Amino acid sequence: MEMQHERLWRAVFCKPGQERRAEAHLENQGFEVFLPRVRTRNRAGGSSRLRVQPMFPRYLFVNLCAHAEDWSTIRSTRGAIGLVRFGERVPAVPGDFIDYLMTRHDQFGAIDMSEAMEIRPDDTVEITDGAMAGLRAIFQARSGKDRVVVLLKLLEYERKVELPASAIRKVV
Picture (tube, rainbow, N blue to C red):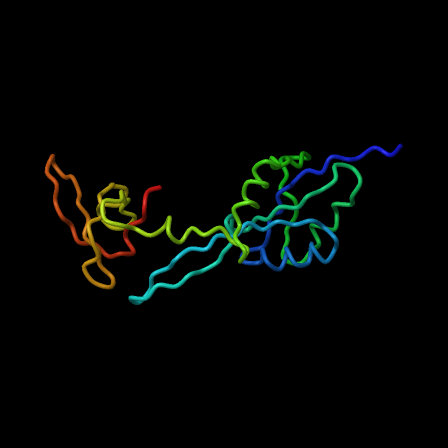
């Protein structure tokens, strides 16, 4: 009777912006590959557009049999640098985590984060740029295509402050 090897997910480190290329080449070699993707909404020039991108830039996951497969081809795969290692150890990624991400992908192959990233009135935001970087505020409204108004507590008083829209991010 042949013993079944447990299949474990491992992380593959990729070259910058080449996750999709590595995914395709690993699949062509017969590996089971998973590249989690997210759909986000980007605002630029007064318009909004949906964008699909890797959830973990420069990483994808490959399902490997602990002892039965030759892993050496991964490091020479186009777009890939190699398996994530800690010394000689190649850590496994919990299968439950991968399963959870897989079940969240929609019919278009991505997890829709566009609504979660949308900033609405009364959402907490962090100021990411300028003299007030690092402070938290309450989003109030857009005051133009590139500007926003936030409510900031300074010296025990709340003040409305207008900032560039690019200088805040939603706190989740």
